[in-house]
Image (cartoon, rainbow, N blue to C red; front, side, top):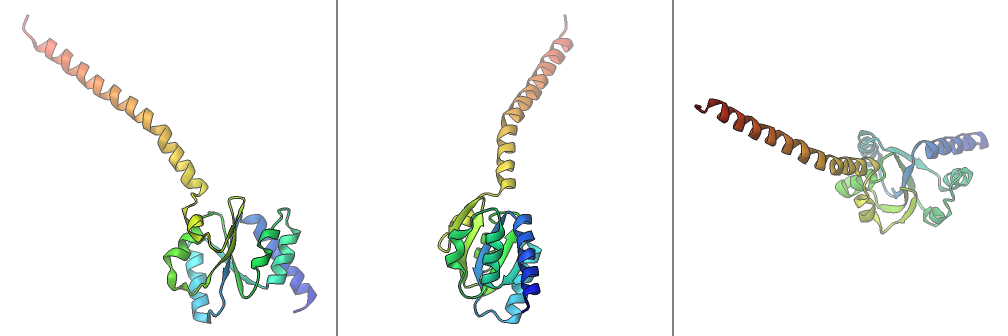
Length: 171
């Protein structure tokens, strides 16, 4: 591979690192073409960008980034695929759900501003995404409002019933 091609790959990886806030490094050693295609298809459906890359080029792209990614350099051995995502826990959930993908395992991950090791797949799957946290907060905020509205509506029905009964009563 010529130097110009390598530089183009490094630039492309840098763009992906800027575009996607989370990424997983997975071991794809031994995957055949069919398994790789199936993995790419599943990732595409889940809006996960999968890139198989040389470790040395990935290190150069990570070095060029503003974030210090040195804690994950030790895990860059063997065949590596990078799963870029905008939802932090999505690749972990896919990896746990789809055991037959052929992925040997998680090497490392950068999600929600922190580094995760190969043994933390369960923790990554349990991490709530930003959207899930926002939905939980909205639900918590709406709960008291719903109770107040419900009480007001039931009180209105009670008052209406009392007034109707009083109006129908003979004098």
